[in-house]
Image 1 (spheres, rainbow, N blue to C red):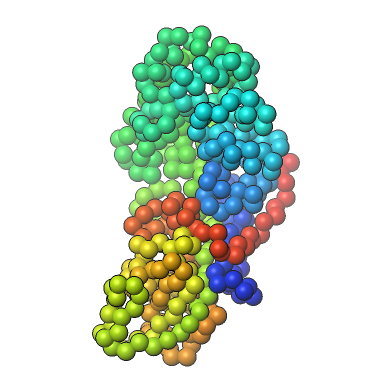
Image 2 (cartoon, helix red, strand yellow):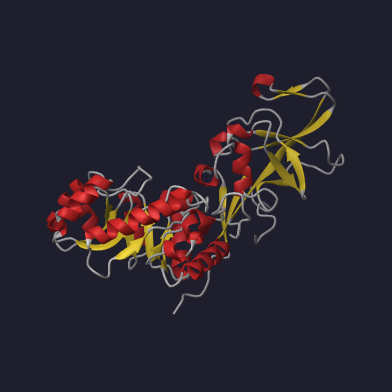
Length: 375
């Protein structure tokens, strides 16, 4: 990642650096892998916590022309940034008036017969359709899809531009659920007898790596754009996008038998030297990393000792030569030696949660933001 010492020269206790050039590289790699299918960009949840106002224009410069968000408000915010792109709202109508979508040229991804019936009153206005093929989370269930196939007139007056589904186990290529959902998607599409030209989409980040038969007309990567590994237990082909560095606030000693942190959950059996950094669970640095996570300084791992508290975390620096660690020096909480997925494993969660939990108190730096606009 560019800017090896992202925290240098800043007064903030912690710096979150987002490498937009890496995001662009990730997008272009995914687009090439999915070709000839179109590659969209998922920027919901403020681009997975990294800042849609910066990330979405960077993806647009890379050639992305279709975007997915979760909510109507996210769609409105994105429309002000990118006036000409296609924007789908994954949560469907969610009780909103159709006119609200129409005013901002946003396309809801309809999730039920009830939503189809509500949208039909907006005659000729574009929308997508979400079919549930086994995730059982959001989307039209199989019984409703069967009714729609038997009553095709319910789609009259709707300019359907997208039919999509979502894979449950795509990060595990050998999981039988992938082939089952692919077959259900194909079968349901055949039964619906939709007009030609409607975009079909099944694969998100992990699905891009399952093979050409999963790509259809459009893929919808999100997490992979931001450096999260798309496949479980396999080397990560994506470039890392995030680096989180925190400055050391204090260096101190503790005697053998001393404890550290709330609850005295770590007791030292030897004299030790500690460094306190100004990041805690209020910043999205998870409490579950207590006594199990770590930071890196000059390639050396510094274990977290004691509980992560709201604003502070303590590192054991005893393995480093005395006098080499000083207040003001930056340590990597997420970086070259501890990428997002590794931190997530130590925290007992997934990279998605790590990114979307990153707090608002960090000073944010966007690196290598500008690339030529594609012709």
